Image (cartoon, rainbow over all chains, first blue to last red; front, side, top):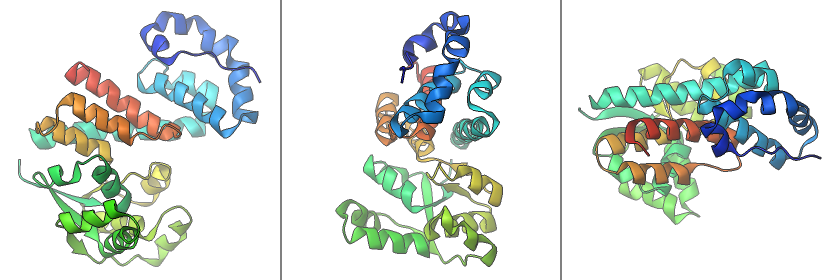
Length: 95
Length: 168
């Protein structure tokens, strides 16, 4: 199975390269193949990379949804929202 | 700021103990646990010294929470300690610190509760200057389970906040 070649930190720092559709077009088949047939480790690695991009606002919800589907993105979005809201609440406690 | 009243489930207490933050938090937080959580800690403490010390060191306000029948279907995904803590949080309108992120969707669908994760407690310690931002980030990194993509969403979101607020 071909490996997904994404350097996450590099991607975060180089948004232009990312949006040149390397991820969204050229590697989309690779991503789908991993999600469909990959081992647990391969799927986890892929989701780690994609969620890193999303959590850092490099990939937006629509882009992620196109790759992962609505249900999984909804779950990721809830996690991100609860995490962000938690930080806001704690900040308010301290004020 | 007075003490914040929070309900903790077993996993969040163990997580915070594992990064030496539990005792530090007691200056700012009043810990509420259910009898089920206390029993779980006592059970785990029989074979794990680290867990045993949680009960020795910490002062908890303990409440027995009856789990209504309608929540018993949740045993498939959640433990008794978690469900009783969620019931207590909902009944008493208190916030809950819980780290079961895999079941987050079920929790949000079934309960009207405000959720915090262990990392939010670390953030509190940083804001209260009990930890430096660097120490806080290191502890968040320790809590991250590298095999879980769900944990990664939380970790990466925290890292972004740290970068923005503490330039780290």
